[in-house]
Image (cartoon, rainbow, N blue to C red; front, side, top):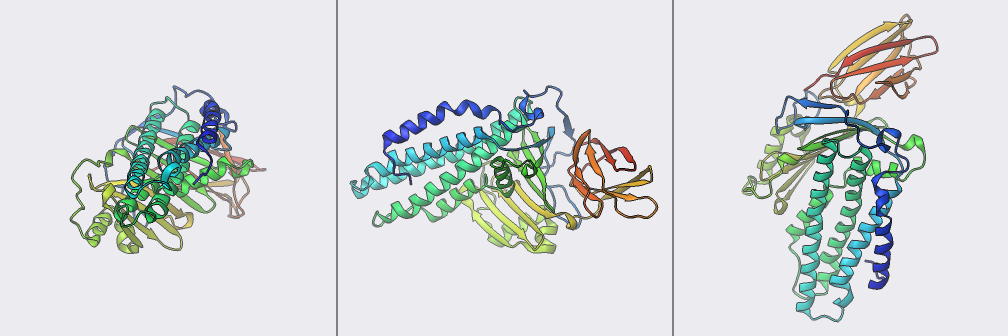
Length: 420
């Protein structure tokens, strides 16, 4: 915990707050995200509005959004505004902890120490709830066209950083502070559940975006697919040979309803999760399970050498609240494939289930040998095909346009992804 005096902390807070207006736009954002929200952004209505994940054969099911969806693709890079906001959040937490606990803890009586710890614990809980509300508001603003892609990612990464700070503060309360109060301690189950609520904001995808936000190298800035609706969001990107995805359904969360899994055994709750993910929980089997009933959250995980799925079930609705996936591209089954020929080149697009990544393959029409080609989607260059003539892309909802160009020719086509 920061040992600076309250005066120094207050001065730092004022300094960081003065810098806060920078957060509106990241300095390295591209033109598409630097500008004000475009009133003509693409919105589509997803007809399938089920609360449960969409079924897929021989791979994980996927949680989908419902209602009117804003569908975007963006490149995210370094962002000074985010760094300043994260510093501010860190200072706020440190200052609150110092004011509530540290400043007078050593000289306090046992009862006074208990009150200090309770107050600090309550404040962390309030801040944790504020993270969820901040996330929801940012997503809904983006879905309505009132904020840019960059601003949404900034908010999600701000939560990523603040959740880490709050997690550490809670851990210190639970260990160092309570150890100094004879016969007193926080509820182990409640602390585990509260930490789980903070872990929701610290996904592997956000970690990758955070790394990109701190990197000055253009090659290290990832392309992300962003889909938002009033009821949730989905972020996805291709990182190396992996498809990384996280999806949240706000309408599948109800902490005020009766906990449907409260009387379930662990195996019964895992069976309920398997109903949502029969391939992951059945054929592959769950790797781990955690009961965070104090937060109405139940966690199941499937992990093998190539694929990783994390699921949070909500006890109030019995549905999937949050889902994070890391899937090896070569493990994704083929859903549909179509080819086009022009200028002696053959372009093949192979779709994977549930609007997943699409493999672009370019070969010589006669020899079948792979061709080095530049691949563009909807007029934007995505990159070059590998030595095997392939490049993976994340398709938007509905129709999209793909162009491949080589030294000898090009193939141009319009197609539409397979909708769930």
